[in-house]
Figure (tube, each protein chain N blue to C red):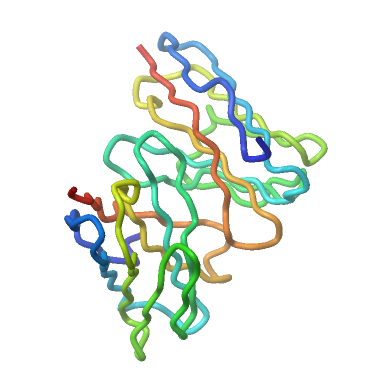
Length: 111
Length: 112
């Protein structure tokens, strides 16, 4: 059930901001946007989530467009340890407790 | 370490054998999830427990798969009569009445 569309891969220079886009044009009003990442050989790690307002935490910022059909995850100062697969997930109570991860964006931070 | 733990980390078995994996969630987390991940794909939901009750099961969870969470603490995932197509990483996650899920390191299963 492809609810989100993400680029397959991206590169980012170390120290620069990494901007990871996600399209979720069929998002419904009660669905949140979640971002997780998965570093090689580890389990996924929660990053951030939001409904319609922009959100920021110690890891990243989440910018959601006004029509909520797309969002961008921003890692303000990418480091080599941010190299991972980043998953954008749309989830709401109507979908129960299932998270649909999709294939994500493979981000490579280049020294 | 108070994170989610999974055992074993790796399991190699022959086709037709039964295997069982264990997940110990973060203490007091009432929700527990099992996922399966194959190479190049994101995790796919298998099943969900709230306390000891198994509330959701994916169509991916064939009748050869069974999961339990006795007493609402640790959980086990058993695969009977394993097939080569069962080779994957099996991930467990837990949460406390929130949607933020904390994942374990996974158990990598190889069926020969």
